[in-house]
Image 1 (tube, rainbow, N blue to C red):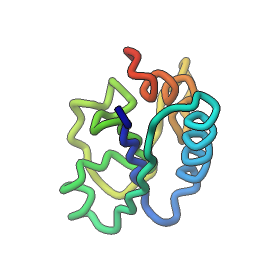
Image 2 (image 1 turned 90 degrees about the vertical axis):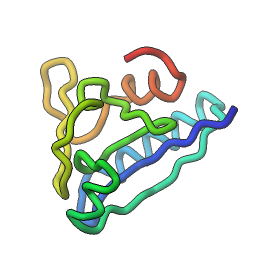
Image 3 (image 1 turned 60 degrees about the vertical axis):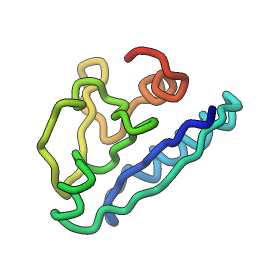
Length: 106
């Protein structure tokens, strides 16, 4: 069954393109049945409606790839920070993306 991968971003976000490239490479390398959908968030109203936690936000079949953010309600137009191995990154790690794409627990 095909997975839907949503990449939510706002124009001007410097890291969403890196995340998109990572997603495209991983889907191809792993030969996954997944469709990547880009969703541009244009206003604070859109951010709230789309439950947008910042750019980039990645959801696989509607579930945020960052398990720690799934209950968050801090929606808005801003850059998103991911905590990975004690570091702060502007994109989810390839490991996090890979687990989410394969349906593995975070």
